[in-house]
Image 1 (cartoon, helix red, strand yellow):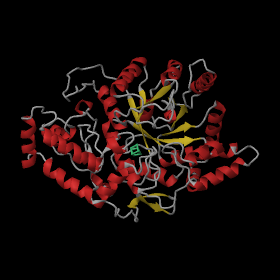
Image 2 (spheres, rainbow, N blue to C red; image 1 turned 180 degrees about the vertical axis):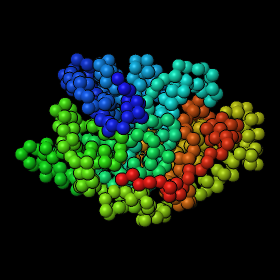
Image 3 (cartoon, helix red, strand yellow; image 1 turned 135 degrees about the vertical axis):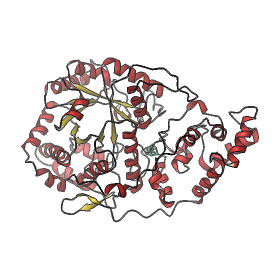
Image 4 (cartoon, protein in one colour; image 1 turned 60 degrees about the vertical axis):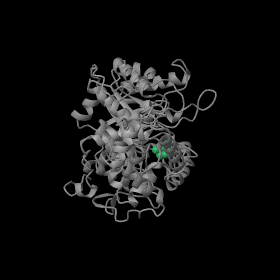
Length: 535
Ligand code: SF4
């Protein structure tokens, strides 16, 4: 039996995965029995290459995915386990990863995860100790034999058995604003650099963006990374939920909602339309050169069979017409590539001629912070040397001299709403604090949850990564966003002086400055001149 990794890299067949949503309750519950029956039918279906099992989907507590996964795995089907950072810290995730590897679950879809929306006796406390990039890096290190670092950041020189994870990641470009789309592309690059071996895109209904993603990957050193297209079987109720923005990161434009509403009036409630719609999406992915399709929103085997059967009935080039039909962009939507009027898809030979103008709302605080930072925290500068001397000779070198610590505390609290994490990411995010202004403490790019630039979590306003992108664009440096090495914050530094930690080489920024300079990300356009159009 071929593993998913072998199927992805040693075959050229268009692969099909199906999502199995876990349930709340034990394996004996009626819903779990239903899910198991569905899974058994999928196991017996040769057209299904793998079954993906969700991890507390939508931020709701559910049966652990391995409970549903074991019978599937033992029956010989490939299983992809979703692993997210919302309910477990890095130790919990490491422990879970060892368990998964020991039990034979080698395919992991690593994600940050949705913000919790439920919990016994009130809302659960979210964890987000690390993010998807941190998780992918950790799983990748485990594949190399894992030589973990201790709390001081030193390697422990413990060589472990190598795990065999096939690591997947998720991306989305179905975003409205340039400051949402570009950070998502940069984060995608980071995920692949850190060890993601395959990518699944978010649910979306815009073929131009769907084609843009494949082209972007082909032209940014990710051409060899398999990309799987997300197909979701809609129904009138789900269409309303998506359109209301109740599922983080999923966008269903008004025009499509109106079509769904109209179809719901038909005698079958739109069933035939929605099956065909899903089959058309699958055909588009196949036509665009995606490596496979990931089928969600299906809860019984008959639905899966129906969609596959319809897709099989299409002719080879039908997808081109479907791509013109399923092309629901929003007014003012940002595209990285120009529009090809002949196909309705991304024109890989040209950049979008109308990129957004730099925002006028970049305040003085960004430039002031940058100037001060360069003065105080450039390795070898006079101020950095003086700061190091002061802290080294202080009664508590973790805190530095008391007056300096008080100045740091007050100035950073006022300017950045600093939470004193001690491992400062301000220069990584254009001087915005992920601890106080990002609900998920994202240090390696945005999660997929923004809606028209706003954070998926109420009360957080504009996403810090959108704001960071706008600040850098104003400064002509947006290409540098996320160029830094992955940041996994050191909890051991919390409550200590970030200034002292930098000057005495303890935090991630100091360690990075001590390393040889990283080659800047090549300008997107420059790398494209030599590439070929895929569609
Ligand atoms: S601020 Fe941005 S990255 Fe952070 S949780 Fe909100 S949407 Fe996600």
